[in-house]
Image (cartoon, rainbow, N blue to C red; front, side):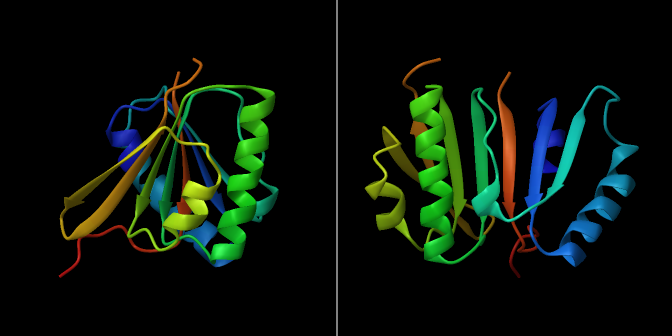
Length: 146
């Protein structure tokens, strides 16, 4: 919903837990009336380790998504996808737990730290090689902390 409010025109949400996916669908249905009609939102039920990244510039958003082992597999899939189709990638990671796993991939050129609304964000960028599409992973409620 945040990506749509920020003006992105195509958004992919990936969720493994059926109950969370259904909640995401309900949230999007309620939120849809506030969005322009030309936004394409795709909610995909799949294991993140099986997700095939689109071959175009993307913003990937992780909000407390999964274990280090799963993260390593997802990032390896991303690395292989970038090998086959080089492009720009931004990865926003809320409350980064596994920095070493991200840095070990060699995917990203830069990382910057931000704090906003009580959350700590790390933004990794890959500007090598050149429609940006957000891909959202996560199950944590994105409301500000009390």
